Image 1 (tube, chains in turn blue, red):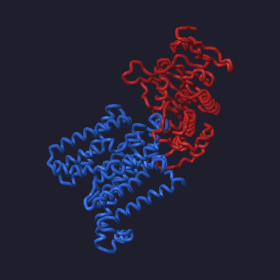
Image 2 (cartoon, chains in turn purple, blue):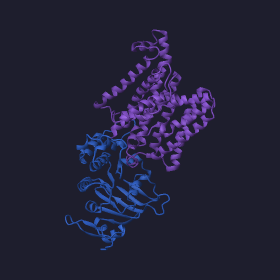
Image 3 (cartoon, chains in turn green, brown):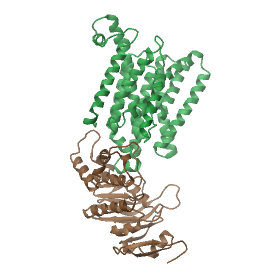
Image 4 (cartoon, chains in turn yellow, purple):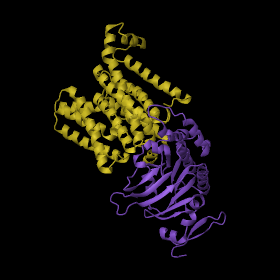
Length: 328
Length: 262
C-alpha cells in the first residue's frame, strides 16, 4: 500500500469519514442519541430501549450499509483497472441484471421472502458465467471489450426477462419486486451482516492480494504479457472476484446503483494510483458514502423511507459531473 | 541469448503462415534488428516470444531454455519487452510506472524486492528520464513517453531487451537518441532486438539484420549483406537505390519515384 507523507491525511480522513458517518447513522433516527449515548448503548448500558434500538436496528443497518458500499466500490475500482475502462462497474457487467432476474423470479413465484437473496445471488452468478461464456465464444478469450459488450447484452436480456415476469405477476408481487430492485438496507439483521461480512472480506482480501496484477493489466495486454502476467487468466480472475463481491451485496441489499461507478473515481489518484491503494480507499469511501446515503434515505421523508438506490443515483450524478471536469 | 529456431506461426483461418521457418540468433552485446515491410511477420515474432501466439513449429530459446517450458515470470526476468503500443488506462506517476518493471521480481503478498530501488534508480539514470519524475504518464510527449517505457523495461533487469518499432512517431533527434541509448546498452553487454521500419538507422546501429518478407527470411547478416538494392527492391516491391551514407559510410536506402527502376 502506498501510504506516503503526502496522502497520509487522505487516509486518516477516509477512516475518520467512516467513523463520523457511522456515529451519525447510529445516532440519528426517530429516537435521537448523542455520540456519548450511542457509545453507552452499544456497550449495553443505560436505557433499555436505547440499547435495543442500537443493537437490533441501527447497528446492523449501519454495518450492512458500510459493507454494501465498500464491496460495490472495491468491485468497481478493480473492474475499471482490469477492463481498462473508466465506465466499467459491476452493474454494467451483467451482475445486477442477473441478480434482478433471480430475485424477481423468487418474488413472482411467491417463494418465501428469505429466498429472495438466494435467488438474487444465484442469478448474479449465472449472469457472470454467461458473460464469460459469451466472451469466450465470441473472442476465444476474455478480451475486456468483448466482456463489456457481453455484460451489456446479458443485462439487456435480463431486463426483458424481468418485464415478461412482471407483466404476468400479481400486483403485490410487482410492488415487492420493484422495491427490491430499488435497493434498501432496512430491516438488516446480524445474520445478514454476518453472511455478507464473511463473504465480502474473503473476496475483498483476494482482490487486494491480486491488485498488483491489475496495475499491470491496466497497461494493456502486450505490456502485461511482457511483465510475466498471464493476461487471460489474471483478467478472468479479477472479473470473477469483483463480480462475486458485487453479487453478494445485491443479495443483501438489492440494487444500489452508481456507487461502483462513482466512488473509484473519487479516490483514484488522490489516494494513490496503484490498485491496492485505489481499491482500499474506494472501500473506505464507499462505506462512508453508503452509510450517509442510507441516513438520507430514512430521514429525508421520515417516517416513510426513500429507496436507497434512488438516493445514491440522485447524489451520484452531480458527483460524477464534477468528477468529469478532472478528465479535461 | 535468444534463439529463434525454425519458428512457424500460423494464425487461424490465414492461408499463409505469418512466420515461416525463421531462424536467427540475438547475441549479447549487440543490436540485432528485424526489418521488413508491413505484414512481413515482424511483430508476430515478438508476440510469439512473449507466448501471446502459439508456435505451429520450431522453438524459441532464451538462455538455452525453451520458452514453451519457461515460467512467464522467469521469462520476464530474462527478456524485457517494449511493445509497439501501450497506453495506461489510468495515468500513473512516472516513477510508479517504471516501478512496474519490477513486477516479475516481486511476489503478490510481499513488498520485498531488495534490488528494486537500485534497479529503478539505475534505469532512470540510464534512460535519462530523471527530469520527468514529478510528472504522470499522461503529461509526457511522445519522445519522453518512449524513453520512460524503455526505463520501465530496464528496471526489469533482464539481459535481453526487445523493442517493437521503438521510434515510430518520433522526430529525428528523439529517434537518434533512442538508438544511441540502445547502442550504449548493447556495448554494456545486453542483447538488444529491435523491430524497426527505419532501415537506414538499423544499418548504422545494428550489428546483425534479419530482413523478413512474407513471414520468411529474405536476407540475414551484417547490414552490408542485407542492404543490397536487388534484395530490398524485391522485398519492398518498390524502386530504390542503396548508396553509401556520406557521413559515416553505412549503407543507406533511397526510395525512388514510382516506375523508375535502378
